[in-house]
Image 1 (cartoon, rainbow, N blue to C red):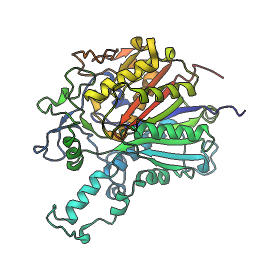
Image 2: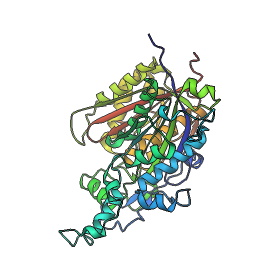
Image 3: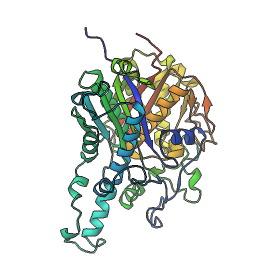
Image 4: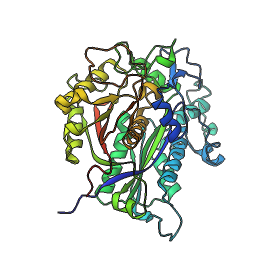
Amino acid sequence: MRERRRVVVTGIGVVAPGSMGREGFWDMITEGRTATRRISFFDPARFRSQVAAEVDFDGVKLGLSAQEVFRNDRFVQMAMVAADEAVADSGLRFGVGDADDAPDPDRVGVTLGSAVGATMRLEQEYVSVSDGGRLWEVDPRYASRFLASALVPSCGATELAVRFGAHGPATVVSTGCTSGIDAIGYGAQLVEDGDADVVVAGASDAPISPISMACFDTIRATTDSNDDPEHASKPFDARRNGFVMGEGAAVLVLEELGHARRRGATVYCEVTGYANRCNAFHMTGLRPDGVEMAEAIDRALAQGRTSPDEVGYVNAHGSGTKQNDRHETAAVKRSLGPAAGSVAMSSIKSMVGHSLGAIGSIEIAATALAVQRGVLPPTANYEVPDPECDLDYVPKVAREQKVDVAISVGSGFGGFQSAIVLASPTRRES
């Protein structure tokens, strides 16, 4: 039987609200600072939910060329910036010919997740060709030459593959709000299965646009706490009333352990398991028993031969909707059993909002840093306990705690439930 290839994280890049870069992001979430504010991208007065977690992002100032900014939607630009940081952090030298430490291009893959893709670019293009919606028959003369790439979901993965000369598998993952977990989970499987030695994996979304806000307004999934944006996102709190829309990107460099060791790379953590399930129950609803998320957690733990009592931290989906937080609490109890009551669990959406497909990767970045640094980010704004949500949610203040095994979980419209397990690289030395 072939020995299982071990997958480790050797680079992390983050573009998040309220900060820029991996270290700024880490400082912000461990200090419990929130980045939610009234929407500034457009006048939100006509919407029920008027708050969001926006990124103060300028692609040119962050190293992109004017042409890269012109041809790409905001979500692709953020993915490129996050990927640049992750690759630099990893120490890998892509595209340097026959250098001894350059990865084989045929053994480098890309997996990029996104829930809504180039939503902002498509909406802007429609406004142009329809003259603000005035024309039923649109005028194609006013469309950009790059409209086609905005329409094709693969545009982000294509840009990253070209950027790093990756000739291996290049994949787009779009499974709603679990896209970020699923993209990294699939990337880890590519390495584990021997299809790649290095995978640039992550997710990006830029959904703060009128069309996206209107969609979530309609089903009342987003908060209407417009008078206090800083405290609008309240996961697991009894006062919670919906999520705060966000945006951002996170990219990780995944690498086969032996490949990383041979070049002396710094390792953040090991990816020991990943699984996803679908509840086939309801497009937006969740069963309160959390069975499907529990199954994903169980399978992810089993892949790494990890017992529930080894888990020290759960990075929660924690969207701040009534049903999600209740469902997730039940799932963790079902999977971890008696150990659930003593396991720390927190939601960084309380600080950076819910960036749809991107948030899963941003949360994995936070989880990897928590494992490496022994600090657990808090759930900001948690003040009033809910009897149905009765676990340890690390309220308001970060906690220093050594963690050998952590889980990051996600839940998405359409019934998607995903879990990924990260462990200290020294936990089980082979």
